Image 1 (cartoon, helix red, strand yellow):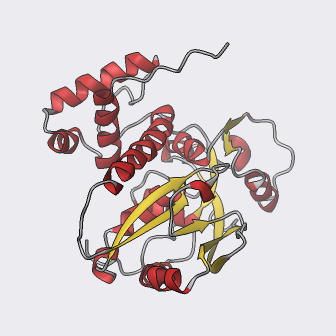
Image 2 (image 1 turned 90 degrees about the vertical axis):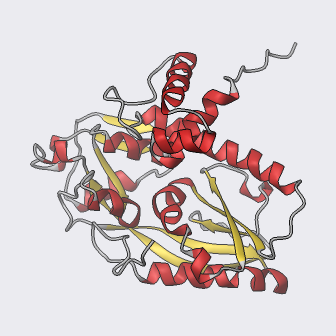
Length: 308
């Protein structure tokens, strides 16, 4: 006997939540959905009742999501993007621009690529770029794509690969913890199942042996990262992904002199002449953006950011 299907909340709740997560304010979400900010707040409260837990911090600030809210935002944004892409693919259009579907790791997409993606329109106006975030364990080859940014080292047969960069990892904490952190042993620890070993390697590099404080383990890195932003503990993270939060004062690196190498990123795509030609403008732009990165615990922001 088959199990009962899992219920889903009304679409208007999900759309309001996703718009707030993507746009960062109730007023912007309301304008996009053609409703009032009060209606957005009402749908958010209804969704919290539906899931049975808070998705926004108690102060109610726009974009101040709980760790659970951030995780749900990631899933909902990806899901609605897939629905929109599927519907959009059925609509006849002739924009004269070349469609380019790019897959990228979720945290890299959210923290580094998305804030820069608007600049592709200037660098390669002939492209219509659609970005889809992927999670560790996804069967990404089954997703429609022209190219993918990968950090797992796997290159499918029949694909070209171009190395992009290797991560530098260091430890970050929220400012509230930094003031009390005399050493890594003095703060709780956050880690994820999708980046096993990073925390232990960094602790070893810092000269920390066996430690007794609690570890909070999360299924995905972006959830562990959001927990660290909220003050839950120390997170070992790539410098390029933490750069904006460091610049905004949401994270600090108390031990910047302790850094370890992380995984390497690569750009992969089907090895055909037509695909090489299609992806070339985007790859040129991507490499130029990466060449602007600063080194160090606050690195990841462009040295001389292009105007928005």
